[in-house]
Length: 75
Image (cartoon, rainbow, N blue to C red; front, side, top):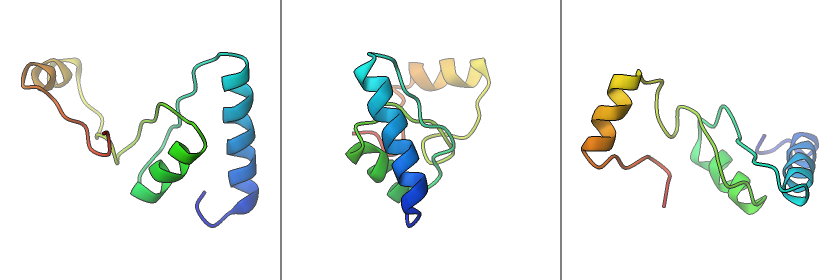
């Protein structure tokens, strides 16, 4: 999406529409910091992808939560 104005316009419009309709939006496939930063400027509040975490089993998630899990890219 970074560097592709058409894609950015589509994503920005989808996020804006969902926010106006009070719907939750989750950006999927976020792999780079620049993508996450761009989504934040578009008022996207949730994202998932390899930048934040690789796929985990339920057991791995529970173990990480018990350890005080801190996700990458999350303030």
